[in-house]
Image (cartoon, rainbow, N blue to C red; front, side, top):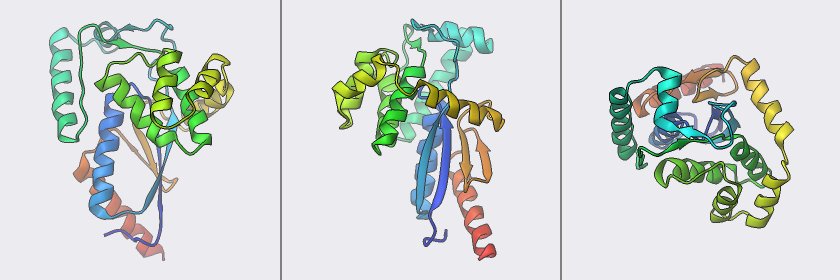
Amino acid sequence: MTDASETLRIDIVSDVVCPWCIVGYRQLARALEATGTRHEIHWHPFELNPQMPPEGQNLREHIAEKYGSSPEESERNRQRLAEIGADLGFAFNYTDDMRMPNTFDAHRLLHWADLQGSKHPLKQALFAAYFTDRRDISDHEVLADIAGEVGLDQAEALAVLTEQRHASDVRTEQNFWLQQGIRGVPAMVFDRRHLVTGAQGADGYIDILNKLAQMRAETH
């Protein structure tokens, strides 16, 4: 068991179009519950495809270009993700016409939501909007709608997006994590010291949390 008297800080660097980011988070959440770990989560921006044009690209074509995946490999990966997601209570609804969008505006909106203490619910809503509901999360109207759905001011959200607010803030934070050597996501930093990359599985995160609790106990 972890030391319940101390809150564990967890920084998660991720993109809202990264399937393993939502998988890793759901696995981590399961582990946090299983170990009874008191925690606070801080989300940070990362763009998988910062050069993606505004209109985006067909997802299957994008994966083939970026990773060299064949259509068969892509289909197997999608099926695997769907199975893993289902076990975690998250639905991946892939389709042939699904697109990889540019996510910079989504990260600007998340920065704004953070100022109001609503970054976490908006982050979860954006994952579901993209992977489950296949909404265009590069569209300002769609993004503002999603903000409204989690209790944020829809009109203000649209103003944030159209006026290009928080662009420099997001760039600064992205650059910080790049300078820390983060090149892939999810990247999780526990206690500001221990970096874990990739989705580790619920059992893997339980082991990590228990080791952190043991380390803390030894230093007290």
